[in-house]
Amino acid sequence: LVAACVTYRRALVTNAAHPETLAGLGETLVDLGRLQMKQGRREEAAAALTSAGEVYFRFLQIDPTDTVGLYNMACACALLGRSPECNDYLTRTATAEHAAGADMAEWARTAAADEDLASVAGEAWLQTLLQQAAAAPPAGGAAG
Image 1 (cartoon, rainbow, N blue to C red):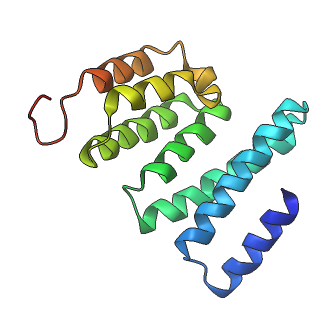
Image 2 (cartoon, one colour; image 1 turned 45 degrees about the vertical axis):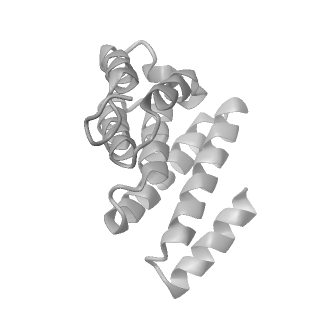
């Protein structure tokens, strides 16, 4: 994973705003942070996840409604114990997913089961968001 991060960072030297490269680096840094947490390497994990957040912040400036980028940013925030930021990015994810016509009940089930969100699983805001998402009518307002 470290080697992949180096490769992505080298590619960003050529084009610092390349969306796919930013997304790939962000995903790899989240994976690295998750692995380091499992290994008990908390400081290294925090550094990797903080870097992931910085990369996703840049990526989301290019495409602020990218659902994968928003969701991964929410996961990075949750893994860092940053509940308010997680709330913001997960709410933005739900809004973008709904606007894109996603099955919001499925989205809510997936988010509820995501281990990356375990640190916020007991938060009232998350339960409310998941309930609202699961009950949301399809985009366009017509119930199916």
